[in-house]
Amino acid sequence: MSGPVTRPVGPALGGEALRVEDVRKSFGDHLVLDDVRLTVAEHEVVCLIGASGSGKSTLLRCINLLEGIDAGRIFIGGAEVTAKGVDVDKVRRRIGIVFQAYNLFPHMSVIDNVTLAPIKVLKMPRPEAKARANELLMRFGLAEKRDAVPDRLSGGQQQRVAIVRALAMQPDILLLDEITSALDPELVAEVLSVIRELALTGMTMVLATHEMGFARDIANRVCFLDAGRILEEGPPAQIFSSPREERTRRFLDRVIEAGRL
Amino acid sequence: MNDATGRTAADVTSAPRRSLRRSRGAAVLVACLSTIVVFGLIGWAIVNSSGWPLFQSKFFNADKFFETEPKIFQGLLLNITFFLVAEALVLVCALVLAGMRSLRDPVFTPIRLFAIVYIDLFRGLPSILIIYILGFGIPALQIPGLTSDVYVWALVALVLTWTAYVAEVYRSGIDSVHPSQEAAARSLGLSSFQTFRFVVLPQAVRRVIPPLLNDAIGLMKDTALIAFLGPVEAFRRAQISAYASFNFTPYLVAALLFLLLTVPLSRLVDYLVARDRKRYLAGAR
Image (cartoon, rainbow over all chains, first blue to last red; front, side):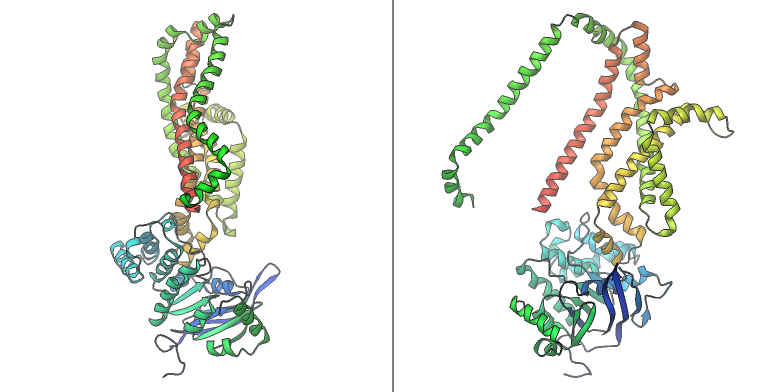
């Protein structure tokens, strides 16, 4: 319990890793993000919770610059990435994202999925990329699957490969978009344990999740999104046990009813 | 699971099960018998019709067959050469065209428009018309530096026409790759070209190999059209022999030789489609 902010797991928080300033995003007439403000420190784990359609996934996709924003600014490590003339490919190298549906490349083996970007984007020599990929696969219990194609793996294994693929780029921040939502219940734990290990090593992460129990365990901070706004944020203990906002309370009541907390 | 539920299922549906088992064993026999009976009757009716002897001497003349076969085969070698060169060029040009049509940045609108107009134009015109226009039209202009070799223009005409078809096949494959694949690749920092080259294109090509082969068969057949510019290929060889003797057997020889090339390609398409279907079903589980 030393340092300015306590952490459930991993090293103490560092400087600013990510800042989202008044970001607004619409799809047609539908306002998905309504002046969202969010700051994430190095080594911090932030969980985004909220109903489907509240804007969690869109916020992650905007941070990764996969979606353009209509207004506001985004800073990574203090530098604005939404400014004109910024090379989006260079920004994306520093931000890993893992998707709900894994999105592995089905025509490539596991090892090729992991080494593609280091070889093509970072221009890493193939043997070095392979060695590092093998190391990561070993660390996450996937060593014997290195030559398999994604279709032959279980959902949990595929999602762990997707995490390894993102980690192979050594990102400053890892974004995780409901990464357990497509998994059978018995496979959720193996993926969550990977995230827990990453938190221990100090990886800065922003997770959109429906796993409230996990969010409570791992997050430094929980943000409740409602209709495109961060309605309430705070340490998990406070958000989950004594939420200030009526809507947060109603959302958590529904989650408890569904047996997810 | 079969053991546990098999007995009750058998009790309830014993009659259909028995008939199913019997039909499995008899299916091949029935298929063979019905085929022999149907085609036997048709064959018998043809051979015993009053016009058959004349028909046979004009179309199925064994002497003519073996007399003209080597010459027509010589002509076919020209078809095969044209096919191989044209197909190689088509596969490359069509890919470039499909890539042009898939560019989404507003800057590339003129390129995209060019691709759309090109495909509309060359897919909408009969091959024979393009072969005539290029083969007779351009040499007639006598532009210095431009060849008047009909072989070259025949080849160009075939490539221009089939590039339009094949580009659309490629594009359907490119469009069939889910946008989430592109998102995954771009999120790793790959450029849009790298994403196209390493992630989208390999998946797209794999899916369109059967229709690509389909168009290869079409191109193979279209090589007979170059005869209209003068090159003596299989069809023209057959025509010359037929005119010389008022016997149509040479056409049958040409037809048979074309089938010897295209039927194996057709079977290959069938095989690939079946294999893809199996793989798809296995993947879906």
